[in-house]
Amino acid sequence: MTNTILTKERKDVKIRDVWEARKRIASIVNRTPLIQSTILSEKIGRPVYLKLENVHEVGAFKVRGAANKILSLSEEEKKRGVATFSTGNHGMAVAYVANKLGIDAVVCISNRVPKAKVDSLKRLGAQIEIVGDSQDAAGERCYELEREKGLTVIQPFDDPHVIAGQGTIGLELLEALPNLTDVIVPLSGGGLLSGIGLALKSNNRDIRVTGVSMEQSAVMYESLKVGKPVKMEESETLADSLLGGIGLDNQYTFQMVQQYMDDVVLIPEDEIAYSMAFMMDKHRIIMEGAAATGIAAVLGNKIPQQDGDIAVIISGHNVDLSILLKLIQNYTFENKG
Ligand SMILES: *Cc1c(COP(=O)(O)O)cnc(C)c1O
Image (spheres, rainbow, N blue to C red):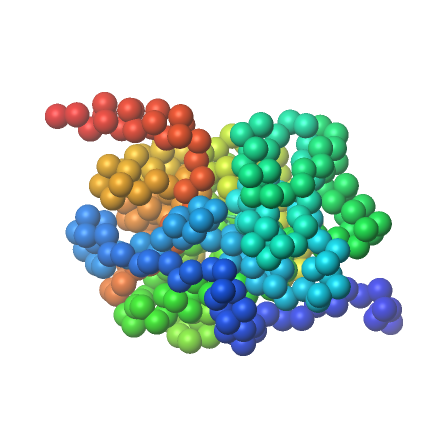
């Protein structure tokens, strides 16, 4: 017999939740542009559209999920504040949304986090707590704050409100592209793909959802292969926003990615680099490595052949400019003459 009191409450994410998210976040999250890429369309012989999630003020889609989660907290919870231990796009999004709403946000970080990141979090109004020298220590401190001070830890992907928030991208795609047949989604913890997959497939089961990750440390990919969440070593990659585990006690996204993802493509580092430089050259769009995985899948013709429109989620633009400049120099050199 199972002890129902000890069982974690788990509620499936529904398309209704995505519609509610859209209403809830409208005051702080703008609909993003969708543009056709003529050059990519010509290259693969079917229309390719770019969903520009890089144009949010924080430079990535994560503001959607963070806004939906934080706005759904009770007044009491909002008063106590929120916490996160992400220093990447999720941490920035939480800090940004909390600041807009006048809610306290604490970001717990290790002393190894670079000063540039700490500074941008501070500029967004976050309080910084430096604890220990590992991401694990920062995470533990975060949950301590939750237990002791009642702060709410905002999960980066495995949370129904976060998933529904990311799903609003799917609604925007459905409205803009009646002939959509394929969507290409960068994949890490799977909040983005779960939300978009839910939104699209609730409307049209035939739209194919392809996940894209880097070749090394693709944790969701390996987890799906063995049928349960696994832990992996992280290796250096340009797609740093796709690093990180999916949680061994994953509640939502593992199962939703299993359900909604039709294909998965892994991209080698040199193709990520080439795609970042290509987009700067041809579209004057700055993309971070995570977003470039989707462009690499198109450039490499790795989308299962079919007719109809393809949408690529340009998930973010937060890349160190010195890294981007180096890639562009190599690219210009290789493409001379
Ligand atoms: C977080 C992130 C992703 C992956 O999103 P998940 O919900 O973790 O799968 C992709 N691209 C960028 C730029 C991100 O910040």
